[in-house]
Image 1 (cartoon, one colour):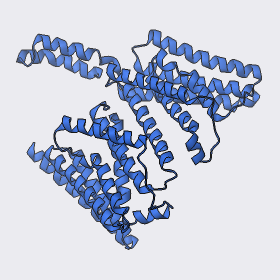
Image 2: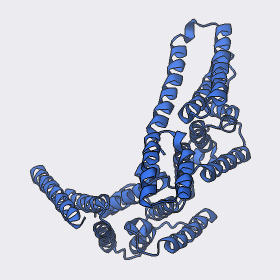
Image 3: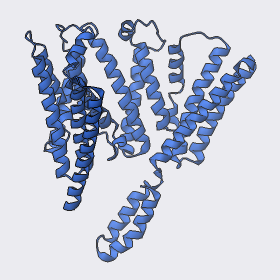
Length: 449
């Protein structure tokens, strides 16, 4: 809780006691509960601290790079040792004397992580240790691993998880063959998997210890980005030889729907969308996939990409596990909500794409029927958002549904053979209609309050 909100609660509780709204015991419990969260600070303070320390680290690296040619071997070595020891000393000082200042603690971990990489690069360049970029990234990841546990610092953990993802991708043998890359690092896959399990353990620990903390939210963003990147790479590897783009979209929709459900069930840290990384990524992923398939030209574009329309994707263990996990989470979601959610389109998107692909994969492919089906599904899903938004007095949900319908109309309008003037006039008319409907809905909602 913010300090000003806590102060407001302290002032209000005596009035609530007089009015009999709370008992003395309940008032004491409220103060005790929110006093523990009073010093966590604002999300903006955390963000500014992290950005500030990142800029400081990058500034130091830039200054060293500018004066690199003028520095001798001894000077470079002393600089490498100096920046590393200084950043470590600063981090330990913060932990010892300013541990209550979460933004400062997180930022000191970020600075230590960056200076670790800078000092490693200086030593490598000075003494010509050789190796590839992947070797450097592996060394950086390995040497900075304990920062997360020593401080601890979710900011440093965020950067390490992203770095781990880059190292994992660069070490992926099949993906390297696919993109014709020979880059290979010294770190064995089992070592990377062990590190990943420890990062996950740290994340779970933070979820249990401080679910609504800004640091835990930062970890959720790192995990969401990392898992999405790994899934896309694995899916690309699984389907590379089969060349079937349409089937790939089914598994992408399955993955993003799974993200959305998992975010709603376990991995949200507030009501605002930036506090719900899994929900946001899942929703945006599904909507982008749907919008790409609304046009009647989408099928022709897929054929133009050179994918074999006769290919099929076999259900590997990877795919089967994904389907099983989706079914499990869907059952948990239905048991929790026990009603049709406003964004049912996101949840049912794997079924929509399954039917769409089933229609397009027949020998006598029903291309137009498939496109009409996905458009009707999209329209119904957007309509449910509008109706549920009106029922729950949620302008955000109403606007989201209306915006999706407008974008769908624009996509089909751009497909039509009209002049730019006609399209411009249509855009203006649609915009005016959208604003008018928004104002009308606001007026109706205010009248019911």
